[in-house]
Image 1 (cartoon, one colour):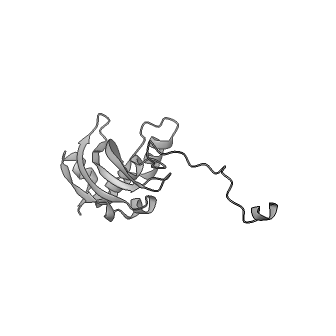
Image 2: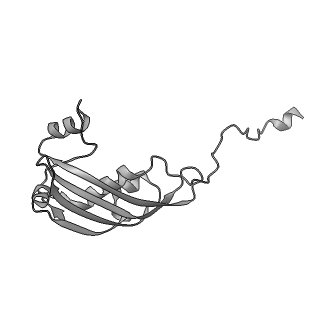
Image 3: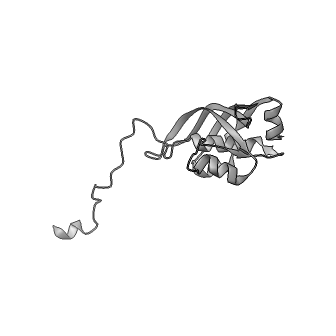
Length: 155
């Protein structure tokens, strides 16, 4: 897997693409049981109208994990595209994302060695449902009373 200088990449209007096997995504695997699948990505750089370097990242593919309701296998289609501005300081990024006049929902710090796999993994994690489950699963209820071993005594 390769690294990019994200500011230089954006300024030179470069593009890169590739595939990632989700079994290599350690953090995502910790969030999802039995994660498998393959993701395709494209990263393109540009300078926006505020003269800020930006990476456009597109991630698509199909991953398999376990349904959080029935614990059976579940396919999730991933198709996300995000513009990720590059910030030179953490305080600039925090103000732009969390400040009173926040104008962005995502961002990355300037990095001469941005690891593409980690960047794609971040985008995948942010696009995942909080609790993946089948649309047709019956909700699990905990109102059913289990058989009591003492029910024999009541007879």
